[in-house]
Length: 407
Ligand code: F3S
Image (tube, rainbow, N blue to C red; front, side, top):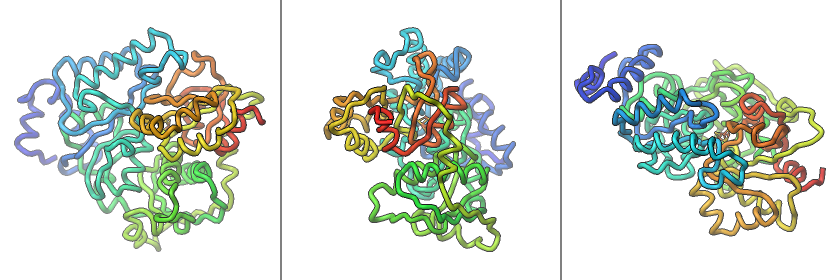
């Protein structure tokens, strides 16, 4: 791999042990994937933040970076934690767990993540980390990666946890994969004849397509999306991408007449494989367990936008929830939702709006939950496979009805 003089100096330890180790990781990854050079990145998004997932070994690894004086070189944001960093007691976390989770976030803060005050979220693009079309970034959270590539037209691979930290410390990543124009062309054409009404219908569609697509780049030829007239278009694309990234390994998709690179991607038309979707009901069924009782309703995977919080508030107006209903979102999004009176509508109905947290990576059994309903395919996928609880994947209205005891 061809390196600049400065990059070679970092690799040889001229700027200290932390930067040396970070360069070794970036160069090793680039070499494995055939990158001819490194490229500068404008921002980084780091995953692997839940103490439940990384444990004491992960915490030691982070502390070592921080204690060696590692500092991020580019704006860097952090994926969700297991708990709300302020209201963790209301979620039922123990003081011991909260202390460990806080130490994880403190190590990142010491490295300069979030300019020293990280705001954990999987939707950095909703709180200001919104790269322009064509810019190179190194993001790790799969739902954010697919959003950045597809909806914003930025360029990023799906970074792993240590790879993203190394990219943040060096401000570099290898010039391979989705950073290269030739790898951004569509390889699978999806024709959708199913009726799509709600955000969760797009999530169910993504659950089906992700399983078939694997690492392909899907091109949706005929989605009923209006990029200008539909106020929920971004939420639908967010849900579609997150589901495909979870059930498959999709890092980029295109939607005709909607996403920024769709026209260029469509030029490969004759080489497409073709997939026709007649019905999204199998997408819901594939992520729903047969459970008699749900003990938590979780909305906000990926973290809820202001418009999604407004939908929940609207559905809960004049109702009362009978079982816990938790909405998760980025802390700055919650602050605006408070100002707009949306949080008070949800919380007066008995629901809760938490910041920072992701229930898919939380110790749900320890919190007393064993069956969770969600309008997110990715949420249901993580609930089953990472949190190891039963899941019911259903449209938002159905989830609200479950919480209100209507069904
Ligand atoms: Fe975000 Fe957790 Fe879902 S990281 S995308 S809320 S599984």
